[in-house]
Image 1 (cartoon, rainbow, N blue to C red):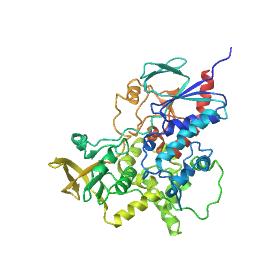
Image 2 (cartoon, rainbow, N blue to C red):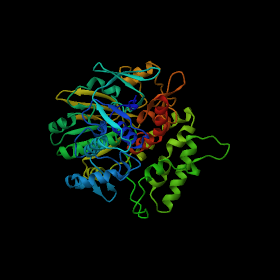
Image 3 (spheres, one colour):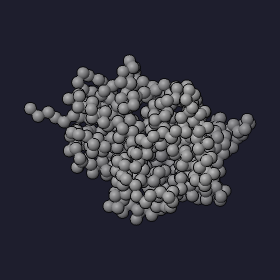
Image 4 (cartoon, helix red, strand yellow):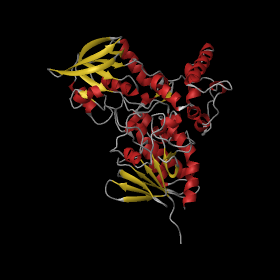
Length: 489
């Protein structure tokens, strides 16, 4: 009797789910029945790639954003077959090609369709439009209870949660439904509706100065006229610029260059002297010393930073839980502005607005918000130890998501925590997994049937938030997944 192929169920169809599905289909030694459970109509379009705003761009060049990290030329081949660059000539600049987020989402969706029709293992990739309500482990299967009332059996499950929903700061809860307060600017049409209402001379406050704020500012600059913008955060830090192209870099690289780089050796200077503890303080000193040496040679500081960033998943686990929490509490914001860099097109737009006096960045903490008569807002800030008040015509929340926040018990992740299937990581960020992404249950045992990939593993691996890191993480996870699937049959 012929046995059906093992079933791999992927929960979540954003970038993480899409890259796991494609890589599994291309690399599996046997045919698999791959089912991606995602309520959206198209796979690959996670939160960053759902919108259609032409001002929002992927912040990394296409060479590092392939759906398959062992085939880094895949995006370029897709572009060569399409007319995307003719529609968006501004995508190409001296730093590389930076696609609009909406176009990159189309690339991901079409790539999944491409490998659904034909792939190296003969696997099937099916998109099941639904949500998972609960997951239960049985002796021979994983049972997934779906919201529409059905049940699905899987031999192995990969949880691809992606990023959590945007965080609503406590001082905004009482004004979150006001038409002049936009809470989730990258979701839906609230931001564009606000732009239509803003008259010349209006003043807009943008809460947050990260990449989300940069996207929102780009929209405000293009879709409004004569509107002043004040972007603020506690430290007023804005993302750094992209690393300039290396003139000495080889003109062609092997398809595997990205995996080779991220899976490469940790630079020796990052390790402390023998007998000394591995601490955040040592890492900071080592990186500063390395960056200073490179800049003295006329090389970009980003080169020294990237050497450590690319292999952070290897040395982050060597830190104690206390050291990880110290980094997240004191240094993460500084790391993020160097790590998550502005696309050159966005950086140029922001620089021009600052020079023209239309945009300002401030270091100040929001203390309170009051709605005034005539639909204006009075914001109270803490700035250099003093309280400062300022009126605005609108407020846009760009504080983003918080992986370290409490787990909502109504979500699937919350239910899995209650069931003991998931456990919060000791760092306070995301959930606990082993080195092959098997989830650690509340009894301390690693699951052979359930894995977790992507941003929710940031506490374990240090940096699993960007597309290229998620793709390579999936690549590292797959051999053990294939092995467990073989043993389970």
